[in-house]
Length: 176
Length: 127
Image (cartoon, chains in turn orange, cyan):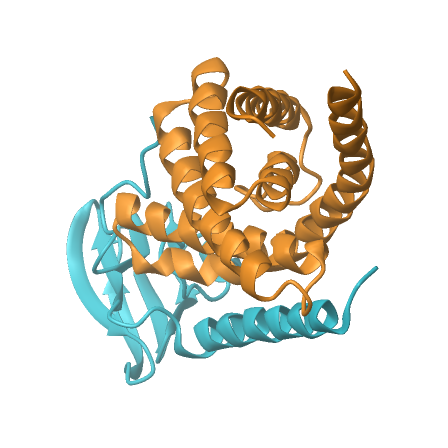
């Protein structure tokens, strides 16, 4: 796949991620846990990792966070989401690269969302300078577990369709 | 869809979350001391440190209408008896967590539970 084509696909992923990021902020969270969210944009970062690799996943995710925060968010939420996004993408990329046959995408996604939670709580406790926030981590982890399963399943289905489409495009390209 | 690794991972995370939760429930926040600050008529009357090695005592506090007897039970405080007309302060029961308070309005007695870190400060600021 040529460079500019890859860039176009990656920017499509970023656009999808921004859309999911904004849609997600409209969905009320049914849990009585502030800070818990669905993590829909994680589907996109998982796809970027699966289709292109960890570096590209990181690029897509950081861009998604920056654009998402400028369109609908605040500076403090950017801080939290950037820390969570960077650490969880690196973690997911490493797990996907080295433990592909141990975990399915669901497992990778769970690890990503739990890493995201830990990073966010760490940043929050640095910002608020209280260690006590870690007592809140178990609740976030359990919620993150279920949202991780959900986003993982969504990524699996999306990948099946996307890979077919990408292959089709490549075939058409060669015929031309 | 789920591999064996996934299932083990889910179980591990659940166990880990439970472990952190019970750890915090048992040990609380280390390094934080809680105090019961007794105020009469807006002025600090006495400060008692609470916790596992806190005192077990009954304390007579002179209020505006009469005496108020507080019971301190290591980590918690309650109003045992009071010379006020409606005894609302007794019905408040035990107070043990920082931020809780026992108030006897007719006697002008307030017992605040505070800890050494967050007393008088904001919990957090979001901007």
